[in-house]
Image 1 (spheres, rainbow, N blue to C red):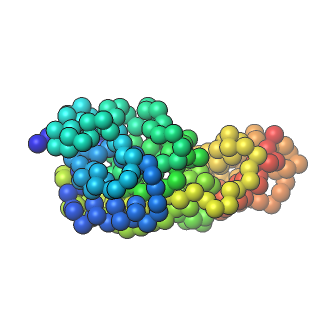
Image 2 (cartoon, rainbow, N blue to C red):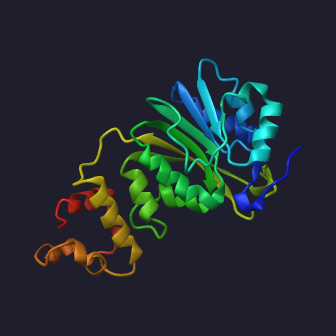
Length: 250
């Protein structure tokens, strides 16, 4: 078989019913091109390869898994990319869908990479540590609402699909997991620029215990900071609030 590498955050899905559930969620929205991140032991891959009329690729960093997968699924030979997802080039021309049981130790970085490619990502269905999935899907006013929530939801609608128990994996992780889906927002949010929006959101949440006025003071002039919205804390602002404020930044 293959060995599991803790350094790569490997917890391989072994529950067939969960694999099928993920593929069913994927098939709810049509796609022509599909990238799987971290196929590992092929729990999802074996179903994805059977999807008709789909251009399929997968990206796997672990050389041992690449060799195992190409032996187990010979049709993968031209479809597997032996690289880190965080360093690879865009896998397709045009729009594509992403799926994966993501390594938990780099899941936030994976999300930021997806955000870089957001104009071409039509759907994402991914397995995350439950806590991270909740954070991404959370709404204003909750304790877990933060940078990831705002930056993702500014560009995607996030659906919290279902939770997955520890025993669905080998080895069982010490945390619960959850599958979420990203779909591009139907109506884009107007913002000064992505750069200023990201700068504002990160500054606001990096000092989330302070009022917005104190957390983002260097980004606005004195007159603008008199607005009562700056009396609030970062988690009290909606995505639209942040977007509106971006137009008033220096």
